[in-house]
Length: 390
Image (cartoon, rainbow, N blue to C red; front, side, top):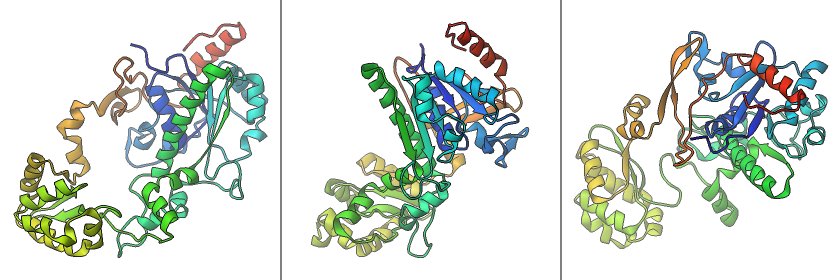
């Protein structure tokens, strides 16, 4: 079966994480993605490591499958002409240059849409193309800090912490996918493209959800709670006899069953723990009581009882344990591809499971300019008024 986005051509001028993550998802869904770099390669992640496999960066490979590569010197008139020819037959152009850079190339939205009024033009910057910060460079770490996300991550003693992955970049890439697909869908009605202005800072703030709205409604600045939940209890980690377990109780029924499993059923009948609001209010006392009980047995013992009783729980797995999880294997969340330089490479698969148009892993993460000849052939066909897919 063809991918859901078969027939959509993406001209990808982005690099590093947010943009390439977006275009990889679109490529997984069947879009034709042309990755554009400067001669010699200009995607910084090609050199980010270790780890490397035969000098190929694991970071780069994680976000660049299902793309074809061409090199273009955007500082030359010849390079701009090449991009302009591709713009004419592309559905989407995406970049993450600093605000004002595309204008210097003569590739502003106005200039691009004049060449192709139907094109969807997606800009990804640190702070967006409007506002007092529009000219500042944007980095995930910085926007995690400025958005308040770090201020609520960690515990009382750790100080503010960033997440273990560049979550702002990832969220921005996901939002960009949503925006691009929405614009393509709207285009089927209006026949017109439009510009999408994505900001890492905006995306970071959007991730605050209940914590953000809680502050806006109450005016109370939230504290760092570590692995505890701001609005639910018990919803945290507990130490067991041999490790830790995550417990995520969301209602009174689950709480009663948890207390029964722990052989302290009377706790669920106490007024101070009778509702979620009261459990949150008396979180410290509740945690102490539950923790004493969890210390009595091993993680696997509690996990088994929780599963049988319908109490949400889970072990804290390291990546090697996660890699062997039979659920993830059954869901095809790990894929192996052949790479011309690195040989066999293992990648994390796609979480998108479409019944009629499943995700396909067609192309390995490309080497710099690997598909130059094919793209040049496409440009030639364009000039001959045809529009062949690569």
